[in-house]
Image (cartoon, rainbow, N blue to C red):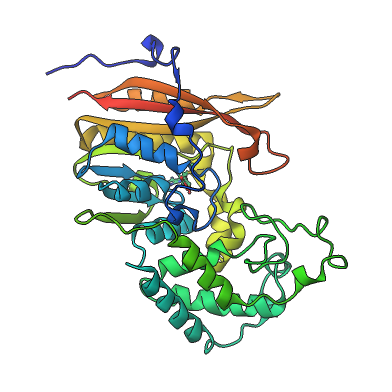
Length: 383
Ligand SMILES: C[S@@+](CC[C@H](N)C(=O)[O-])C[C@H]1O[C@@H](n2cnc3c(N)ncnc32)[C@H](O)[C@@H]1O
């Protein structure tokens, strides 16, 4: 049966978008599952929003897909709510966090025992030659701490099923607080805060920082509000670009936040953590083509076709898209996403659009005048 195609020009929905429901905005730092706080990620979705989208647009037992999973917020919430999960992302750091959240050890005691074992294994790894470590990495750490950290990362890289502990380690890599490994620096994007905390005035912030107690404390924090996953739901993560990924043959819901074109640079902003995962990827993720407009459009077009084919009839595709407005430049990736979805699918219809204005506090760099609003684009498959 032929169904009339929706075109961007004839959309009234996009012009009449709604403010997001109040419940989506509820603060979650003291109530969300603490696994969400494993390690920071730029462009991370608020877990209350992920939770609301999942409960509104899918039901228990459904398969929820997130092909731009980033730090794994949607996959974790989906799994906690009894959905099967298929997640993917191009970045090794995103992959590590997504897997860590989807497949964490069954209990805190198990995780602590694993961390302990890995720490002792790292003690027998050969001392690294710090002269060979790039300056931009070295300047973040006391030499002894860096040596311990490199040896521990080696164990994480070579040991099976160590993603959760590796993610905990990356989560304590840099910050200005005492529970972290670096000299005083920011937590999200790595830059030193040595002007605010000069070495002469704060010598204790520049001393050796022992890894083991900090790692153990981090593992405990991760389990503070985590009560296990519901039974009988599966999780899959694939590290791949969206254009080459094979999505499940059938799924009931896709909820995802695509990269914001040029607005965020996942390679540069995660560079220190990426260096510990793989020094080569720390450089190459910078050139990720989907951050350019053309690449972004191609990747989304490929995704639209896959969704059209495999989303079940009546299923929802929800896109969370940041729009960038600065004094000199206005860009609306959400319009681009709507156009591409409608042009490259036969059965997707834009059913609803919600909008949210993001306060300055969530912006990630001081000089960054980027995303100011977020659109939630809700498509439904009509047959
Ligand atoms: C806005 S972030 C997702 C954030 C995520 N929802 C969260 O809560 O952490 C977009 C993600 O798209 C990923 N990405 C960029 N280009 C990609 C591509 N071609 N294929 C798959 N993932 C890609 C980036 O690595 C980034 O993690």
